[in-house]
Structure formats: structure tokens, C-alpha cells
Amino acid sequence: MKCAHPLLALLVLAPGSSHGQRPERGRDLGIPFEGTTGPLNAITDVAGVEVGHRTLVAGSGKLVVGKGPVRTGVTAVFPRGRDSNDPVFAGWFTMNGNGEMTGTTWVEESGFLWGP
Image (cartoon, rainbow, N blue to C red):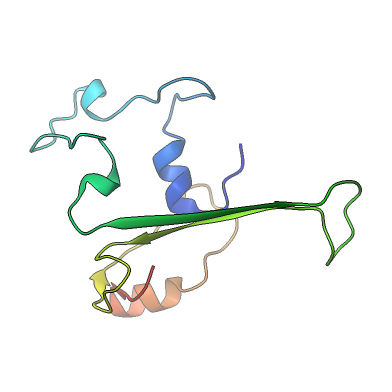
């Protein structure tokens, strides 16, 4: 499974997981996290956090560059809600050494992230 968004890949493809199986969670492995999980055990359980996503599937047949077919998607995490312009502390890492992520230089230099 290829994931277009590095954070989503980190959250969805935990080590040892496979399609159709529930991935092992940190608490399941005995990692002593403080606090208790929310009702959904998800990032959206955190007050103020909103997540948006869009999947685009269009066309069929042989690929014609610039025309389709298209199979893509994006996920945006709004750490302080969609209407907030306040920055949040940020950091990043590459999980598998492939690809690049736009904006990482700014995150490295400032330590902040504005926007989703």
C-alpha cells in the first residue's frame, strides 16, 4: 500500500500490520503512555484538532499524462482547528528515505508550522 502523506503512513501502517488486520497499538505492546485514550482512540479525540481529507478518482483506461486517469488523495490535519492562524511546534522525519516533503526546510529552521 502506497500512501501519499507521510504522517498518514505513520499512523495507518504500524509495524506488523497488514490489510484487514487491526494494527498493534503502543499500549497493546506494553508501552506505558500517560493518560487514557479517547472514545475513538484517534487524533480527533484531542479537543480542537480537526482532520480533513479528499480522495479523487476520475477516468479509466490507459494513463495519458496531464489527462488521467487520476487516483490520488490528501489528508490535512488542523492542530488548532480550521479557523486558527496560530502556529504549532513542528518537526519531521523521513520514514523510509524515499521522496521529499515540501516545507521541511522551514520546519527545520523555525520549528513551527502554519496551516494544515
